[in-house]
Length: 202
Image (cartoon, rainbow, N blue to C red; front, side, top):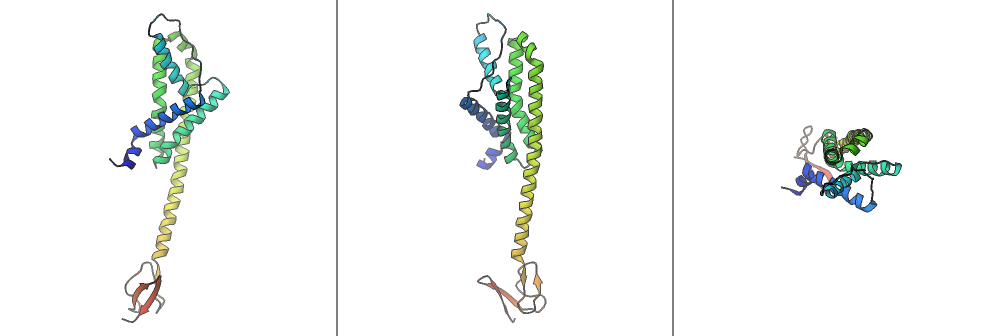
């Protein structure tokens, strides 16, 4: 598999996005306090660690937390937007990555701490849906904007190629959209020499 194709694979993009989230969380030491039910389960500590870890990637309950989570996810969402020249692929990739930690957080939290889960679920669900909508809108808008820019660059390149291929007969002044070997009008032999067209009688 070519390196370019590898980096365009959804699995690779997903892994890079999650890695960026983990690095960002480690650098900024972002934490959100999650409440748990009292439990005598010997594995409660391990379960709480996983739930808390996932919560740090997706949830907030302060203004600073709101800014951190939203900015981080917007930055993470840029990768598929830049790689895929298609807004559907971009937003589906971003929703897939966003869905992953959310799904496991809500499932684990509901399973191991149902009372606390029920108390925060409505608020956190609204925040999750709002951020998902933001990611979809950003993915669509930026993807379409970049596609427009790329199309303009392609048109400009095509125009430049057309201009470079245009030529003119030095004998009769006939214009061509290409660089023919002979002039169709006066039958002059055309030859490129040092970037200039020189006409010689056939």
